Image (cartoon, rainbow, N blue to C red; front, side):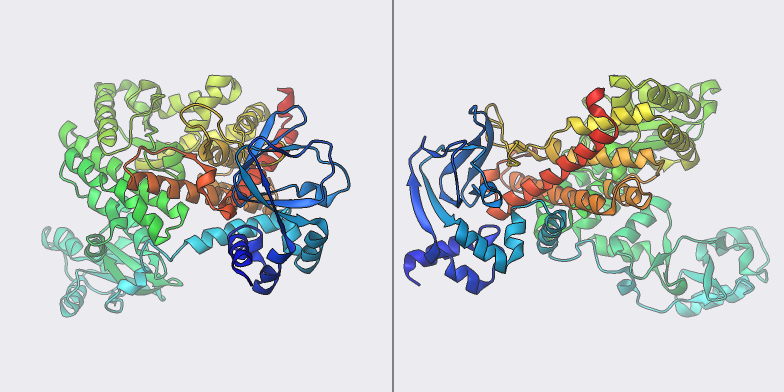
Length: 620
């Protein structure tokens, strides 16, 4: 193969779908292509003219317009055009114009059909087969993942077998077992299952300090039914569980049978050397400044997460865990200054924090649910106003900016008693005007972060019950889900901004990530499902029959791909010390990524079309 043909072959090997062809097939293609040069402004294919050629842009750029000259899409190096006329008999429906000096590689219909006959995936690439699109997005995601970045299985931390006792073992005997094995806690096991945990603190506080009976059974002083983790649980998840539950000893089981125990010390030793465990270090910050100082390490770590191959959903969980830990610690510090809360309460994370999907520089959304007794307890309003002000300001200092829409517990509208929240939810659902739906969709993505979860569960239960019974409310959510339009032209190509600060870019959050979040929320609420994360909602909705399993999987892969692309984009901006945004320049992406981006947007647009039809969005 001569040098020029070899260069063409190497170029095609980087372009989809040629990069999926066998090597021997790819080697034969360059000699069967022609090259054609077009000066800027040249009409390559006129609307209404015949075309029997697949065009591949080697250099330059081409715009696709409708017969009236309206821009439908822009294509550049590595992109193909002209393929729609190869699939049906008829003239071109579009006008293709070179907007820069452009060199094209041209493939005749005969060669195209020959390759497509031998390799059906080649033709499928230019079609709309959802299974192929989903497989390609999934393969790209898996190829980018270099391994599990959130730590080894917790079972790998175990240095000894489980040290156990039975429920009828005496306290004296249990103390001897702990001394002999040099452990600070032991598992209480019955019929091969963990039924309790006994710590040296239990013995000191419940027996020694009170003059209790050391011959009594450990079942009288143990903590019954302790939280456990499977040995395959990732150490990161185990660390978060310890932080959330405030426990120092975590029994490890395999299929319910005890195999060992990990302590806070075991996990925090790992946390000292691994940035993933930032949440653990924040939970021990001495003051609000310490919280801010430790949380400030998060932003530079995003690039490291991307390089590690961390899955997009796990990067979101790391960022969310950081925000959760900061919230808990700031509340602890506020209570230390203000005194104990006058009534029970629950601090609730909203929006992306609730979904576990916080991104880089996400602002904070939160609310407070107060016990109904707050209405009649003197000083309660002032106390929670002061607590919320401290926590929201502390989160702002920790890198989670104040919400521009003031959706924060420091705003009295987002700090209410349980009964008041129930009434508010009812008002939002029953009278879904623009403001009501806007506020409802923020609040309906909620998760208890700290406090009395029974208050949260009470409000959430009514929220789900009311949303299922309100077709009008669901129709308004459907309209909002369809308002977020993917940046696709009529030709199903990418459409970039033509002017302004973000010229030649497209917003992958507004055009892709946000509509999937909206669609998943709609499907989950329509069935009264309690799932909050986007992927969890899609999976649960498919299980409930609200959406087809294939459609849910397609949306899920599109969502994962777009979030991964967003994190890669943010990592580059952080490395360049640029402000973070979601505006991606498609010309900076590989040909394969541009095609995957189109595929993801096509999936979303198709899902929106189905929702618009089901809820009659066009008639609203």
